[in-house]
Amino acid sequence: MMGGTGLAAWASINEPAAPPLPPPACKINMGSPAENCQTDDGTIPLLTPYRMGQLQLSHRVVLAPLTRCRSYGHVPQPHAAIYYSQRATPGGLLIAEATGVSDTAQGYPHAPGVWTQEQVEAWKPIVKAVHDKGAFFFLQIWHVGRVSNTAYQPGGQPPISPTNKKVSGTLLMPSGTESGEYSEPRALETKEIPLIVNDFKMAARNAIAAGFDGIEIHGAHGYLIDQFMKDGVNDRTDQYGGSLENRCRFALEIVDAITEEIGPQRVGIRLSPFGAHSDSPDSNPEGLGVYMAKALSKYNILYAHYIEPRVKSSFVEVESHASLASAQKAFNGTFIVAGGHTRKSGNEVIKTGGADLVVYGRLFLANPDLPKRFQLNAPLNKYIRATFYTQDPVEGYTDYPFLEKMEEETKPSISDEHVKIKEHLKCPFIENGGHANNH
Image 1: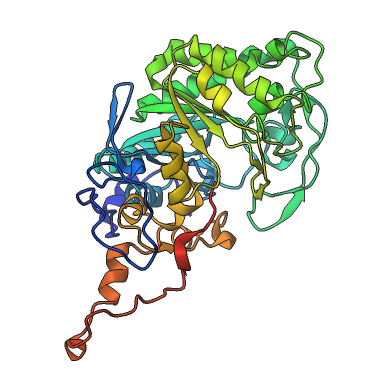
Image 2 (image 1 turned 90 degrees about the vertical axis):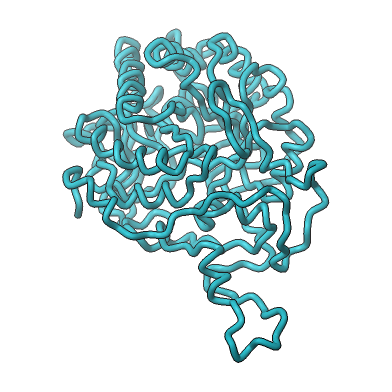
């Protein structure tokens, strides 16, 4: 396995990079029905420019922060430079995978960190590879809290959480191949909480030192911050438990510390008030979402990234009549949404003003040139779920094909000169119609 040294190695690897977007008008139909959702000049809403604070984005298709389990020993690796630069476009926005703020923050095999100097140095060439493509790059920082096992914790200690209630189900152990139960967590003492806040602040400082344009606080999906906010988990009786204001105190103290450290214009946050990931539901999710939106607005942070109400857990989506409209109305910055969006639904949410930007996970994972495919309404590679969390540096990571490669494979040969149109080759990754879900 590669460590944090020898990081210039990524530059010598000749891998395909995502080409720049062509002019915005959709001139090619690769077999999928065209969607009647365009601006006056023929541009689809997802590919219109947007000004986010000081960042001028060329389009509104954002790479989701996706845990990839390929940072051996929690140190980012050279192959990450290939992965992220493949998905970078001039003026595009990428959010890097969830990255631990401390040695107690871990709960996934080979997830990256940003609490040591070695990790900071390892991130630098990865950030440079993205910036060299003209894209903007934010680092999502997290602490998994009770979503962990003692095997991940320093000295084999219990994971920390606002509660001592254990998560049901199983997790991947550090080997990446074995499963185990979640360990019973230890409820943080009140006096310890400022130390965790400081870990987030230092991680944000380190992210900026590594060259990132900003950070995203992971306050979603049942991890530590979400555990504090949700009344289905938080059973504390101190100033961090009970009322909605108290349960959100920890999250807002982190926001306060980070904005003070690196400036609000470099800060975003991800929230999933309607989610119930890792046994973390809330009895009034809309109230929670609106409260946080109003509170966050006071800090003038750059963006709020909300998960759609229909997404209840990582692989579970349900019919929902709930809406993020009230939270969006309450927030004064850029409003970003994620959760199973397709090209069609993403265009619709932008067109109707439901969000400023749309985050794509599984579709962007499988289609490194996703903005271009959206523009051309081209077929989409099908994602391979079995390789989401493997530790292979290539398979399911940097080997999804680009549209140019697929088109080259299907060009008529000289003997086919009388064939005007050749049927598009269906690669193993291709899914007809491109209707794959994503997070």
